[in-house]
Length: 472
Image 1: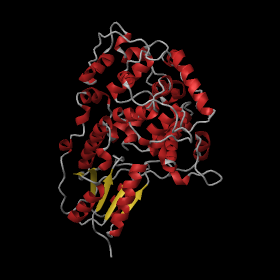
Image 2: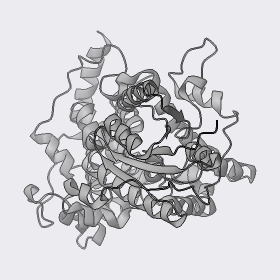
Image 3: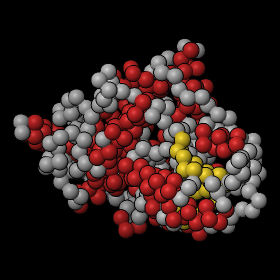
Image 4: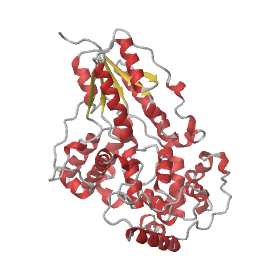
């Protein structure tokens, strides 16, 4: 007997039509397809910027679905109960979704799958968020990788899954279920006045992501190896924003990078290594889920980091007195993103010069980044703090001044984002004062502060503490 019941496609961080195995299979089945997005317990827990940016992505996908004669059904509530209500209303016999790999989403999805299967529903998860499933990549001893370079060597020559084209049409149900209003969810409420500023820097949706990739491969990948660390140059792809919400698949990046390599473009392999760095983050999160909240390395939970203090607020405000650090923190608040080299510098300064817990920084990024990713954020903070996957963590203490000389030699990045660094600051630097909370009472005519922690003093203090920790 042929199943003609509708299929609910539960969309999460896969807000695209192309390279979408679950959607492709549903379209090929000939059965009615009902795309659904839930404002569930995971969405409810997102920080201000990620939740706002997710809302923009949902809106873009809804419009894309309308273009092919379908629609996106929006519902708010706990995931299982909301899906069960939709199943009852629509008569759906299947619920399909793309797998996620962080512990919170695994717990939610496992509970949903078990309950729906017990109800006789075809609950099925598909790949699509990663190139390689975490359990598919093993060492020669059948274990997971804990160091990046061997992981890269293990996957660089592997075949990747076949890409699927975007469906040109989806079979509609006889009757569409009711949908809630995206505006009614007020997903940008916590952004307050910052949304207007950050909104000028976003690139939302599948078409924007594809255009971004094409532009990067045409104009920038050749020099990616040299330019990706230069904070004063536009040398990166910017695609972390779109990857975060699944507006583009890692397969699209992999195929474009491989094509660029075959054309002899010098920076293509380095670009592919960065794509695999994201894979490695999810590999670790899947196999060692404690990395998202606890020190990855044994013995680091008792490290004497400070909790959040008044000094931490100065770090958040970009008022540490270290120009490159402050410029980066201002860039974050204005654009919702931060140059990757800058992320290492602000993280090192917080966890080492200030000896503040990496979770303080992790939580701030989780609230402010439009490209927030649970795996990349956790691994990045633990790597820079020294508690994560790294062979020699304790003595790596970045010197912001020497890093600025190397990666912002003429001060262009600092002038772009730090108003106090210029007598005639550009609009980008002034936007910070329009975006930041009024309660901070920040004005451009305030004098620039002295260093919160002098670099030499902070470095020595960190070395002393780390050496003591190493000795047990």
